[in-house]
Amino acid sequence: MTSNASIPWRFSWSWVDTLGSIVMVLAWSGAFVTITWSPDNHQQVLELGQCTTLWAQLGRPLMDLLYCQLFRGFQPQLQLLLGLFCLWCIGRLLSRLWRLEATESLLLLVWISTFPFLVNVFGFETGKFSIPLAYLLTTLAWVLVSRRSGWRFWCAPFLLAAALSLYQTSLNLLVVVALMSLIFGARMLPTLGRLLMLTLPGILLYGVTAEAARWILHAGYNTRYAAMGGPETPLGLLRQLKDIAGHYKHFLIPGHALLPPVTGVCVAVAFAVVLYHRPWSQLAALAAAAVGVWSTDLPVSGSLLGTGYRHTYPVVVVFAVLSILALRQCRQRPRLAQGLAGLYASTIAAFIVVDNSWAFDTHRLAVFDGAVAQRLAQSIEASPHHSAHQPLLITGALRPSARPSGLQPRGFDVLGSSLDNPGAARALLRSLGLQFSEPATARPGSCEALLPAIRPVVTSPDCTVVDLSQL
Image 1 (cartoon, one colour):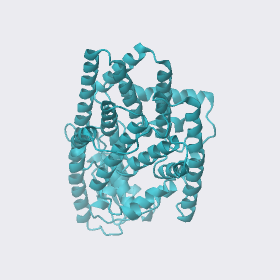
Image 2 (image 1 turned 180 degrees about the vertical axis):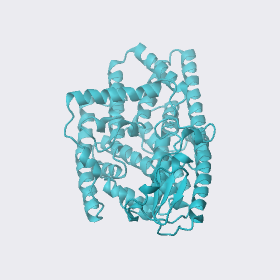
Image 3 (image 1 turned 60 degrees about the horizontal axis):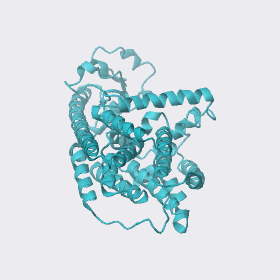
Image 4 (image 1 turned 90 degrees about the vertical axis):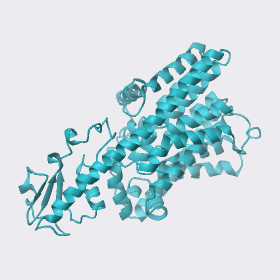
């Protein structure tokens, strides 16, 4: 790592920031106009509005503070802008820490701000600001620890604890950023030492505050504790590594719903260029970071943080660094460097198309869901038995053939409909103003007696049943 005195920490606006901001606008203007609504959002926004301490129960108390106090009205447009600002700050912090040149800084910035798996950050998780903020706090904590001394060093564990209180898999990003620092001049033992000095107190602070908040707020038992099974066994570790390899197959082989085909080609060409020059220490760091994206899954069986799919975003740092290394290796070969730069530009342009396509396709599906839900609500309200206290049971799921043309589901959580599951459908109907009670308040067997429903809506004096598969 370069010395503290030699690291230029003052920021000044440059052409890199201008061009990077233009790319951000191009990539996310569609999402800003349509605001990416997913099934999770319909359900979770309802819970956010009711402030049910859901996030404190799951070990993310700052999420409750953020949404129940600061963003009580959700305000997705503002959160999208704030999230993009956080990603811009991450790119600039890492560029200064790693002493990247202007072109390399731009490459890092556009990779981390357009990677299509940002849809996971801005869409599936509802927290359009919370997760980029958690990643920014994590990056800043590592930057402060890298300065090694002074009061700023002691602030770093508190920043990491705050990041984990927003999104626990910030730890994955920390591991990746630390390993990537080895490529840009940091030494192995000091880097690992600083990583331990940051993570040990940071995780301890996080654990104490998360459990204290859960106890004070009476948030309830964290059901994820029941999935923990102690240290991972060797066979379990092999299964985890196999699962990780399966995820990288989706990144690199054309055909993934969120990644354009040129992405895998870009990463493969960059890896071939780096491999040809055989910088073994850098390749080892890249390989370790590629696995480190899923670091929180590996040590504990039944990790608190879920499966690897939800942790995929930090891999963008690995891909960006690989691209930077390949560009450096081609400096003595101008034509190869130009070809590589063209490939990178094609990849970023494809990202922009994918990001906007996702936003507009999701908006089309949301319009369809809203129209269907309006018809369901009108049918329910037209029933002579309907009242605000009428129990409502929702079953089934929307058939793929019932979707609009061109809006078929593309995989896990990709182009999901709010009519794909009962929970999201209940939240959608509530958002339209329909009032009803839970099925548990019905007489025993009164709802089940209406099944199987042969129509989308079936009513009785004691219960109303909606069968989504009949839509």
